[in-house]
Image 1 (cartoon, rainbow, N blue to C red):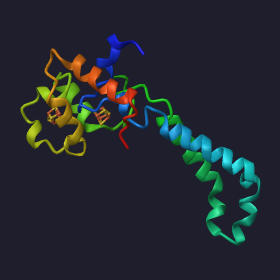
Image 2 (image 1 turned 90 degrees about the vertical axis):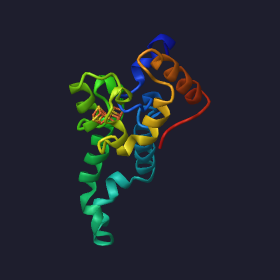
Image 3 (image 1 turned 180 degrees about the vertical axis):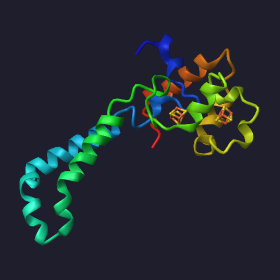
Length: 152
Ligand code: SF4
Ligand code: SF4
């Protein structure tokens, strides 16, 4: 990955996208693993007929649809600035509307309810970011990612 582009992966809330388990492919990999296990046991062919023993198996096709939907929406996340992640993210919508690069520019941040679920990332970013050193924050975070760091 180009080091010069790392700042493009700092989300509006301060979360560093390359550290996000979703962007790292955790959902895609989990679904692929599950599909492999399902196929190796032949569950994809036999579960519907076993629904007399376990009624939830009747919904196998819907379950497949949901798994495929998860991969479709979150399997190849391009990062926050490219509209990846939660398509309904209120933090991103708000910061974009206010024309902030990140919430660290906002004087409402200390009491912002929209930011509450991401406060841990915001606080980490706030210590380093101002308009000029977002690149340093990104480089510090990428170093952690290269050493194995990942958010849940
Ligand atoms: S989509 Fe929202 S929660 Fe995710 S990184 Fe962007 S601002 Fe943060
Ligand atoms: S109001 Fe909250 S979500 Fe909006 S820019 Fe400020 S800190 Fe970010």
